[in-house]
Image (tube, rainbow, N blue to C red; front, top):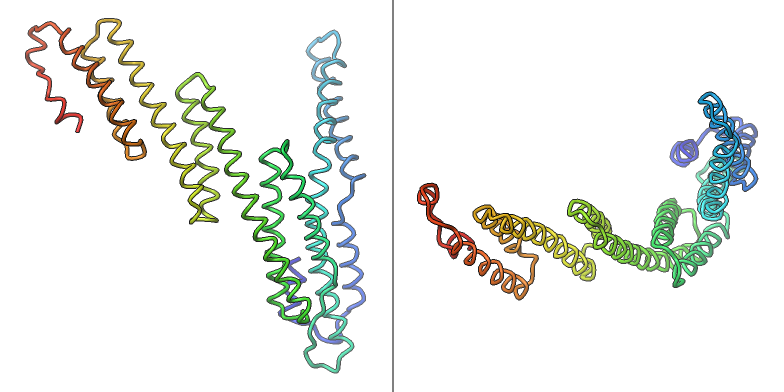
Length: 341
């Protein structure tokens, strides 16, 4: 790829060895061509190597039936490879179509320079390759829009759209296309841009929703917040591409509010535990920690007001239970309104 790009800007002389260069590029193109047989062979070699490696380790450890776990591990590797084969080969073939088109364009341009009288000749681009890549993207787009598809399918289509746009931009910048091809490429780019936006936003929405549901099911506060932050990362990655999408901002606000609610619930739970143990001052401190997060701007006004009223009521109850003592006299409580606001 690097040599082909260099040939576009630094044409070689007429006396250079075109035959040997073209032959080497044909061999390079064939070597890059995706092969389903090669993929399966590589998976089989890995599985066999894993089987014998585990078998040898288990035999050395004195296992009575080393072939059983070794065979199970090798079978799992093969099953995963077979299930992923279609996805991997689809992406490989789409990428090959785009890259192979660039190589063919470069070779065609050199042959035209060789046959010309020394003047610069426009390079021709082989027809059909971008159309084939566009059809493949549309096919995968339709498959990703099925009800049972995973969010990763949408992200994969978005990546293919990005690769298509990059390669067609390069073809348009070369200036080697006729008017009809330029119009076809631009029309294809418009369709692909729409598909890219649709699938990237769908991935961000579905992935963030799945991660938020997972966060709600987690038991520990740390796990809830960590999983919710992953959902925020998905939204942020889409916002970097489409910063004006109000839907993304709404989703980000909803996830942020969930994170705040988790933190508030965590401190309220600690306050209730402290109050149950009779540690009223500590309970009051924990309730004030909850108020700190509740005052975040992400939280809706009605939720903030209801939460503050409940927490302030609990603080008032705890204050009434504290017996005055020497230590307490030295630590007077500040007014709730000034402390919380």
